[in-house]
Length: 309
Image (cartoon, rainbow, N blue to C red; front, side, top):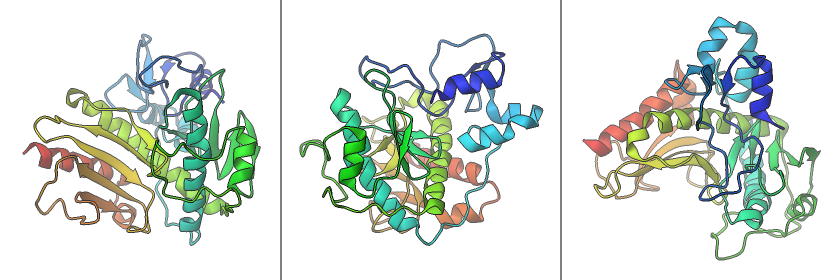
């Protein structure tokens, strides 16, 4: 799957394009060993997933309504609303978290020593690596180099991906068990909801990264052990650096939530989530918002303001 080429062809080569998903070829140089969805060099006419860099896909969809379906499906623009979660969401989240920790992340680590994953269409996966390989999850199915599978267990998933099961013990402490016979129940509607959450999160976090260029932002990455997309930005020496992320839920939060987690502990009304000493915005608050994406951005920007006040 070459997401960037697909977008370029959709526009008939009229624009240089940027998309949220990783695209080939594999990047073989440090430090990231991954493509940057916002990086140059740029063509004369440019369309990107963020406002302020060329034209945005969302702006282009208002001019060309026929693009809306493509953009909404990939969280580039014409954004659809997050919906109430299916009842099977937590069980599906746990299954796919295990895949991320012990198979998808392990495949990338074995290739180049990196563990960060990315949003891919309807799910998550690796950037391209090695000879152009990619392991990803789409609609709850494991996709290995373009071939889709429905593994019943973690051991079967690792075999299909062609990697040893699990990460070396010195990389991180896993949050899910790595037993080969661990079953992987996946509900299609719940997998769709999880993919939508990651797409929504990536769209918002890439905008935050672009807007925060003076604050030395890192890349947006999905960390397998935490299973959440996040980036960090802010002046560390002044105690203003924090992680900005989008968890799909955890033991303390059964539903997804956005968070700001300062690297140095803060006090005050904004920092009200005692489970990690930061700030959070619930999935319910996003569902109730008229403009979910702007509500998410406003929450993250409030975190920036609190840290810089």
